[in-house]
Length: 495
Image (cartoon, rainbow, N blue to C red; front, side, top):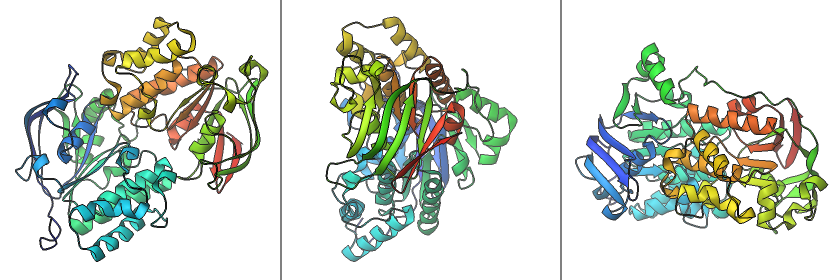
């Protein structure tokens, strides 16, 4: 776009028999897609985990890759042209905002796309300020992007795309890592942009209630290819026959909850890890995130770590997991948990740590080390003891719906599949304490219920499960205590 052209109009989308198969995969990620999206239409794209929703968004943005990265069939067009020839017309917010941040400062990050579109300088900085205000990211323009929390990065990624003022806005789980207030704030920001630009919207979100009232249309992808349902939100989400089909496919239908197995945890046992006056920080010289935290991590206990974005939840979890050095205070493992190792988890070697305290990071890709899912599941046990309990690994893979993906490259999985694999790799080493950062991110209703059931069973069997989460349904289902972090203070609440 040149300055003389002005902002582009809304995009028209058309697909005819379109499909895509990643290189090295037998099955197509998406296939048999026939649809038409009118300019300015607002679409909520649903489907089970692994149905191809993210693949469709990447295709619309023209970033799926060249022919050597996969096989395409059929036709997908933006205003009559292939997406790769219409760069700049579509703006994509990726499912993992970590992979979308490229520059060191917040202001430069938001300005990057408009600069590449040759927007006049004074207009660029007007857009930057407005986009940051819209998404509620109240930070100086020179604030380092490396010091942002996961939720703040999600807001930054959205602001960067909104500043483009694209004709097609593509959002992949844009509120998944946000606190409840942030979810509404970001949704309303998107609506304001759509009202001012008239852009076409395609948003992927597992929890549909947030978006159902602001979209014109709901399209549900069938995991086996094609479209399972397509129509107005009231028609697709409220009528009995469509609701039953969607629920069976794992779609989060408003007013319906999947059945959860296992028993609600009813309390903890012996203390495994003790924190006293623990002050935590992401870096050695940066500001402290949480001050003087007192906490007992008990076997057979569940603990949810909650609080607003940027409060220090992940930093606290990584410190409790022995992966960050405390700024001050003490973190001690029980004699039983430490065994012959030092009582300070931060001093443990990686092979000692993974058997005792296993941590699932907020970004699953940070944990993948091998070329296949099967190798990934076996990597931890081989490193720890050289022996693989294949029966246990097969059970975990089956429970988390990974059995059909054992030969796949972990980096080609959907976001929800990557999350389940990152959980499975930790379960394979059977740690006594399991720390999970946003464990339900990207899960459909059925995989969510299976994950909750599995965690309930782990707690009942004696494992301590700590979860950083904004998912109120998950917190209620897992029970236990809650560590609420806000304004640098952590307070334990027993529910």
